[in-house]
Image (tube, rainbow, N blue to C red):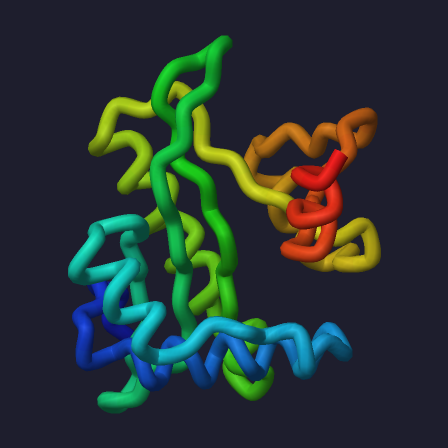
Length: 157
């Protein structure tokens, strides 16, 4: 199979949003996607808040990786991989690995000290893949989120 891994453009965001929604459906969380096409276009291309790479097969985007810079007080600038998504029918074809390598290359090209991401403990295939690439799964760390309601309640205290 021939594919192209490239940086996404504004015109790719409708297909990127499809992939985001597909992932949410896979995780039984379709009702939790609040992001809009306008949000993706503004945040990614007007504000420069993220970089997106896409995997294209026969002119159709079949996968994506969305990343952004973070700052670590221990390491300095890092790259955070927010999502790596491959359409269900394209899993196992190497597209995910190619996108992953593109993210690692992006981190290297930008001189970061770390590429980081979160993986669900139930995603055994991804965990095995990441471990086989030399990634260190931090099993003693917790991901912490505070949603919009929590933010509002916290501010009232």
